[in-house]
Image (tube, rainbow, N blue to C red; front, side, top):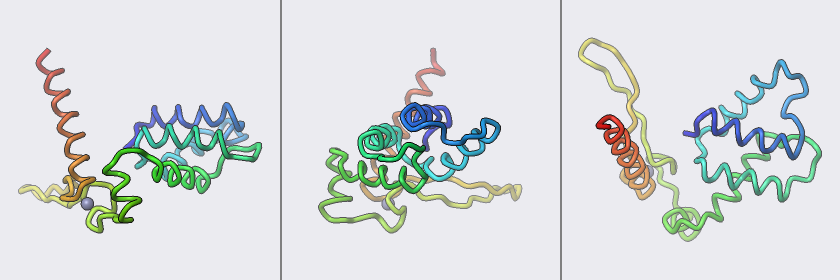
Length: 148
Ligand SMILES: [Zn+2]
């Protein structure tokens, strides 16, 4: 999931090109929240590319709609040169049914004291392997930071 800060950069980049996403400054943050809610599961890399794609193709002198941003994300997702990504999205059109291509599955977990929460597990598919590798990398970094 993209961080709100990174997402803000994406929005600001587009605003520079197309004008404010919301004319009323008091409601700008609300508007950004809506976009964030709809687009937050996009990777940083894809979001960067989508912004460039919009700058290239968006023809209107107004901020792109959520739908238009989504189209751009779909477009660049297909173009990404990552071989795993290409194999799943282009060559076979395969999208894992278990995780719907996100690479992770959410499960409800109930602790002994009855406390319920949601845990994310990496899926068994190729995207899942990629997610697991990213998590490993993340935890390894945290572990190293903790040791400093
Ligand atoms: Zn999967």
